[in-house]
Image (tube, rainbow, N blue to C red):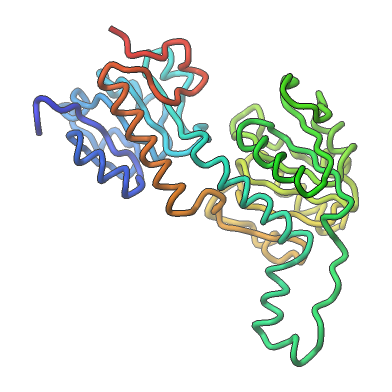
Amino acid sequence: MSASRPTVLLAGKVHPRVRERVEADFDAISIETADRALLDEDARSRIRGMAAATAISADFIDLLPNLEVIANFGVGYDSVDAAHAATRQVMVTNTPDVLSDEVADTTVGLLLNTVRELPKAEAYLRAGRWEREGAYPLTSLSLRGRTVGIFGLGRIGLAIARRLEAFGLPIHYHTRNKRTDVAYPWHARLIDMAAAVDTLIVVVPGGAATEKAVNAEVLDALGPQGVLISVGRGTTIDEPALIEALSDRRIAAAGLDVFAREPHVPQALIDLPNTCLLPHVASASLSTRNAMADLVVNNLAAWLAGKPALTPVPECASFDRKPA
């Protein structure tokens, strides 16, 4: 332990690059989960920063009297009690921007795979069926003629919209507040947007405000030609309602990269023929994950050096400088 270096807690299964940089630049303490039993009193008192890759509760935050900053790996930070951290003047940061393009690219790919059944067509070829049985069946769905509604037009949602504009697709969006910098039609209610489009892309954060926001009523409004794409948080989708809607063909198909209880995926979703499922890989390229890791550590370094955080979450933006 060095008296001149701040102590940083590595909480959870942190990215290897985060671990490497924290261990090089700080005194590091590692625990697999945010469990008070894993830290003795001396460690609790020394910890000033945290790189978080697990759930961080209010109780755990209160356990660390000298904690100053929690750097969360990922854009979504619903697993960290940021509101409580803010009451303690503990800065919470996330990793926006550096993954927006990667996630947007994957979203477009997932949409194409869902409507054109490209993974199934490749499996058909690999199984030798093209040669034995002839051409893969024509797909009933296409991207042509579709109208897209984006639930959540933040950094990632806007990057998705710009890409789909290039495909010649009309874009609608639903957010709590209307944006002044885009001309896309805005819908004050999600169900109204679902009724106006046939392709719904969900890219909102998790949390109580969005939990099961895409429910049976929204899916019914989307209609029998409807396609649902989800790349935000799995909790935003009512999974039993989605399974029923897909089974009954009340919507046509769904492409999902996120699930309510990851890594568990309901067997009913796996068994359905009109789903395209990915194991939460939207930002999972080496370059993007390394950029996210660097932003985690750069936030820690900035705040612990008395400088403003690079990417504070909204709950902490009002004190975006280290208290004197």
